[in-house]
Length: 462
Ligand SMILES: [Zn+2]
Image (tube, rainbow, N blue to C red; front, top):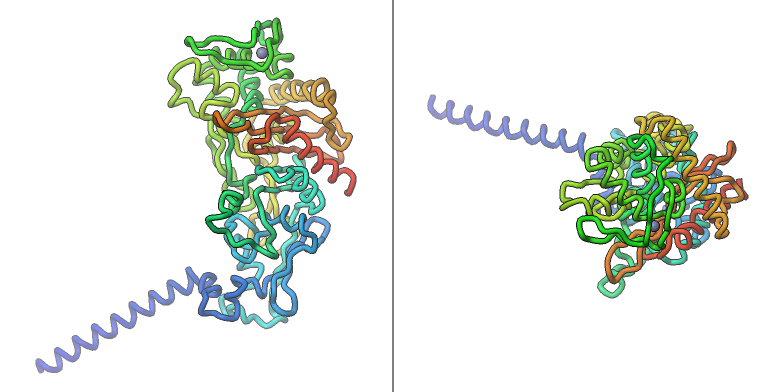
């Protein structure tokens, strides 16, 4: 009897162990099946990270950006510069760029099936190609205009939400990826980040858009006031410096000529609470999502500000301020659209596969500005472009546009980051844009030509 008891007990233990093992296996099959497919021991697909059976990726005009040939090799666009320009959006075989389409949607591209694995009979495979909203020619034009500098350029249609240009540098050729080692790691620093989505930079004077919005909403006589700028102004015994001694200047001219003295004083007068409220409403300190990618946050935070001098610097986009390029484009889209932006998207929403995934629908975001403030910011940015940027030869494909540049100090031994953000005013070409060029110098000369090249391409090669 005792022996039977012992045996029964042993059988129970073994049975429980088997059941537990099966449960664990079942759990892993369900939760990790797509990762198993691309494991190295699955030799058939390992060389291309599972992309050997992936469908094609095309741009908005059905230009093929990546496809798999008969030898099951992944082939990227035939033009070198176009490949480099679109590397962060499309991705490469390494899947190191986590936000790229080939990384995010590998399961969909390969038509991976829970039942068949990768061995889905061709006749049963779902439509596993993906059409993007980007324009390959315009991306190439923007990439070439970057002139080898690091940074980011984004252009999107602020009425439909389609992202037309998304380029990030440094980049590399996905067809012939470099071996990154000690000798060249500086050259490729940050290369796996799409700077449009995943980086935030000191904004400099483009932040005056936010300070201007806060002043418009909280200082009733802002347009009647005049200010004095002698090129330097002490707050708390420390100077705020300005490029020029602007003399007697009004609010509109101070915005157009980017007077630091006026905007630092305005930030101090408005104070931490109101400045933070406006910045937060306009999307700082928040997470945005674009086609399944959570953007790096823009930051406006005065918790560490030691006094009015630092609040002053925060009002002109220095101190601890940070801006994400895609968010800057969304904010400009909001200004163009009367205060409420359309969320950008990168994957064409006509694709049935992507509709099924539910990640592509352009939707309205939260309101960022009142319609009245949006109109007034349009006027400020329009007169800035008309009188100052056009005068220096900056055009946007011949379209009327509204913009603000920035030249952001990032460290004593570094050249400043050059920015331009804004939007075109044209029924057929409604484009919001943001460009940052790291250590590029003045925004108008560094970032302006990149935005111009991208938008000219969109206008001239529809
Ligand atoms: Zn000034």
